[in-house]
Image (cartoon, rainbow, N blue to C red; front, side, top):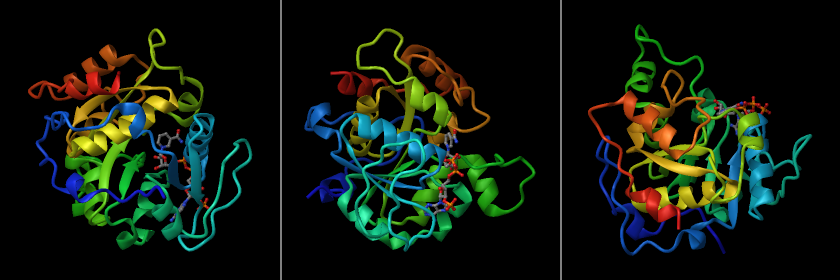
Amino acid sequence: MPTARRSPEAHGQQSPVKGQPPAAAGSVAAPDTLVPRVIGIVGAGRMGSALASLAAGASIRVLVTKSATTAPPREGSENTSLLVEGASLDDVIGRSEAVVLALPYDRVETLPALAFRGALVIDAMNAWPPPRKDNSTESRSGLRERGTSVSVERFLRGAHVVKALNHLSYRDLATLSTPRGSPNRVAVPIAGDRTSDLLGVAALIDSLGYDCVVAGALEDGLRMEPGSEAFGLIADKARLREALSRRHTAEPLDSSLEGTVAA
Ligand SMILES: NC(=O)c1ccc[n+]([C@@H]2O[C@H](COP(=O)([O-])OP(=O)(O)OC[C@H]3O[C@@H](n4cnc5c(N)ncnc54)[C@H](OP(=O)(O)O)[C@@H]3O)[C@@H](O)[C@H]2O)c1
């Protein structure tokens, strides 16, 4: 049975280095074998529904939880063809190979953190309004310095968090998907601390119809958040890479994973 839990090897694979994602390990399986067969989505609003439609179109089973954490998953939403099974958030996490957080960022702390221990979690959220320089509370200034995903990983202790799928609008995401190898295929930035997690998420994104650019370690998720040059950018890999680099010019991007996922 598939599961979002990461293997023990994945836990200790790489240490985070800001601006330098871990190099792809030679032992990582070919990308197509990493495409999850089942994903969970927490939040069945505009973003969750768009993602669910894309995934269903790629023959990936989708398990969705809406609103209350103890509520059973709901059957789809208006304009999607969600494949919904499961009985609770625990069940959805347990049965999915990756879980996408597509709920409002300020609702994350309503989630039962322990349920995500060891799970591969994709943070597709943006903090609205974006934190300002004069935000005095620790949580808001932390967001400004490190982005949402570092905070999410701290809260969901033991989860493997990758920042991804947050930089395009749900409408763009739903409509710009193209098969691998298409000219000017739109690219999506991802950020995370472990090679195995990045490869799994890249394989998923490829199957959803997008190329990937690795922006860096988890805190480099800032490079793709609101206020960054990359946020909202509809571009191929080369242009997206440029935009991500201009955000932190002193820290060159590592392209090693792209070759691996472009197989
Ligand atoms: N909209 C976009 O174009 C876009 C693009 C990129 C990223 N994002 C990010 O995606 C996230 C969702 O945005 P959205 O536009 O889809 O918002 P939305 O349409 O308002 O949907 C949010 C969904 O999350 C559900 N939810 C709230 N708390 C929950 C919980 N504890 N457990 C499970 N589900 C919960 C809500 O259910 P109830 O209504 O029943 O509470 C609602 O269905 C946000 O973080 C946003 O920044 C959005």
